[in-house]
Length: 519
Ligand code: ADP
Ligand code: ZN
Image (tube, rainbow, N blue to C red; front, side, top):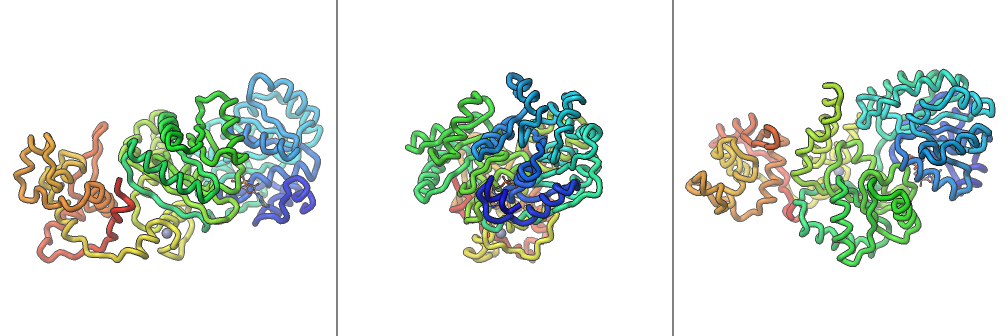
């Protein structure tokens, strides 16, 4: 096994669990592998076919993902192909039937559409395994549910003696149960390893999406570039990809965009340039990356909050695979959290809708959290975290540098302002009032006549917004949504706080670091 590892991949030793898993697969056991992104799951299905000289089938959800992998494997001299592009499919499947490939990738749709005689032909030549990659897609409790995945048990019936290997980087206990059940996994070998990536720094920062911010980002990135390593900037829309790429380019940075509407050829060129260090920066939508195999990515920056904490952890986890210190910054803006309707539009059932909202709100909460980010993520994935302070995330570092301070005065001001605005506005109005804004809306409502008008002008509006995020989190403030709008009012904790104003208990809070949170 070590020989093959060295010969084909040039690695000298196995990462944790790889060897055990490969052994079990070679013995014909079904396996369920839940390991963090970057922990080396792919090797578990790549090596067995090379050792046993029998093809492996890999089911994978996305064409782009398979293309990336096939490209990387071919570069290593491993004979692999994918089924899914209609032009080349018939010749690929003929060759596959003759046992010509070490590894054959396909989407679940494709796999389910292939004839029994195709599978029987493959099985006659012997199959080392059938891998189901991104296996969490099987579960409605997963963040990337795909209906076709649930039909994959049918392949068990045509391939009765082939070990199944299900792999994912994210699976709660419930999702793991679904994977086992839907795939009829039998007498399985199960590996669930920690999700922690101690070498990654995690941080999140509130921004307003603007040209000014993009220029600031460009300056940061430029500084980073000088210290070497590659960077991925993930955007939530194609428009953002274009705007960010343009700003970076104008600042003299050689950045390339990557998204699903580009021609496959251009995507491949961009990918290749990034993989071969011809460019340091790629600005991409989620279309980029699943299966990306670059160990020395030093930074993953998110410009906008992704649709689930699962996606965020997976995408950010693409940096630092070589174990060296790397950083994951998430820049979020208020607009990121108004997309619930958009994300739930395609949900077919109420239950599904709830899952989409849950994972989305977990991401929002992550952004707004003022406690250890690593702990938050790990606990979300069901791990027990014995510490409160990891020392390697923005909140832990900030806590170390900034003394906790009594903020009751500011809290009182903000709550009173929200209260006096009568729950008819978002958070911007009460902050404008505190800052003494002369905006039309303030004057129209005669808010300039309020006693607290202008009392908070020594702080920036982002400072107040950061404070309001903390207060929302702690129940001092409450947000209700109606249609497109959000209304802020005083929450139950805040009411109590205001009532006991004279003898009020002092909330201990972390000062929102103005430098880190401001525009
Ligand atoms: P995952 O699928 O779990 O996200 P990958 O399979 O893409 O992770 O592996 C992450 C990186 O680690 C890749 O660059 C891969 O080549 C590398 N890798 C995998 N196994 C080993 C090993 N035994 N020794 C060194 N590097 C490895
Ligand atoms: Zn921390």
